[in-house]
Length: 98
Image (cartoon, rainbow, N blue to C red; front, side, top):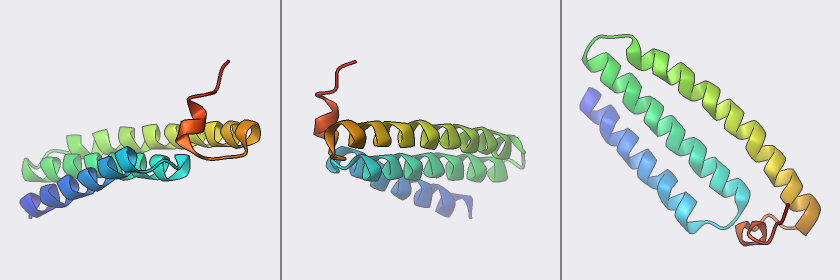
């Protein structure tokens, strides 16, 4: 059971990493980071279930809090990027000065 969960977590993490490396749209990059965070959380839950410890669930709560903070900062960056460049292309962000 836990081995299957770890395999699913590895597949999800690989898909998220591929999305971060391949996509140029900032929204898709942020969604890929969220997939990677959820994969890490699934791995912690599976490891906690394997050793019958609640530590994996506690760490997952921290991952959820970090994901919420990442979404709020990411949304602010998306709005700033679109406001200044009228585009959500990640390459446009490399031209930002501030």
